[in-house]
Length: 305
Image 1: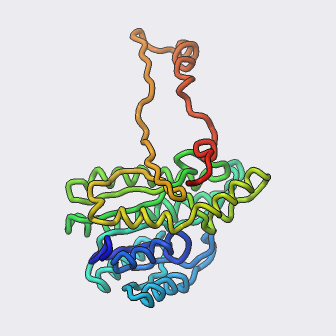
Image 2: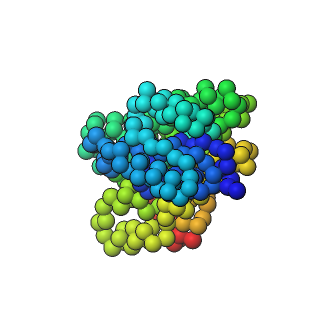
Image 3: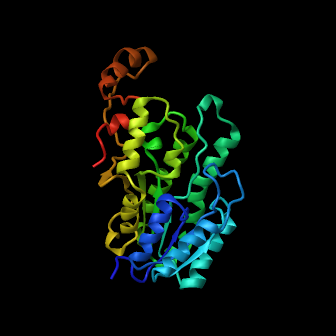
């Protein structure tokens, strides 16, 4: 018996990394799986291949599970609609979507091209819209459905050279929250995961000094894609029906619940603020509550558990 017996789940980006490990675990936990992967390069600059998705689907079937492959792009709304129909035609329904599909096109913001901005936004943010919008009416009709979307500490905390990626990933946080709010009455839930894991996306990060080399090696040794898959699969289960609108992180064997923006300090001036009074009174008073510009390593300075 698995936690997803009788469920049908669509997993995007299922040919590699977190997507692959999640697809395999979904099947081991009893789900019938639609494995989607464009089969493209890390930057998304090629036409892709059906090979990675089909390979994972075959691996699932060889282990006694049920799976079918799909090699369409999450950036293509009609193609995503076909993924939903494929799940219904092949397995008779759809109960959850896990959406880790992604690309990277890193670069300093002052050098970033429109193409690199648009490409990352298209896969991550537009892709998240596509998979949720194409399925939301089905989930509302059956009054049941779960979304597991993917954010990043690059958005939640920040990372130099990833303005496009960070913007897309924070957009996904907002999208997930509204889906969760609007879907609550129909038993539709949506959560996001910020993964720490050694994947080909992380492997592409340039190593510029000894400290960053050590950090990357710690990630490679201690933070695996299969550890992220455990939470992604759990959030698809009916036993997680009370969990929605949350932001999680997975860092090795550690599961993190992130806070969400809420007021931390306020000040009022009954006579009304002026620029001079704000500069001399308000901002200095709030300064101790300001957040620094450190990257995720400053927030998580300790080794993975």
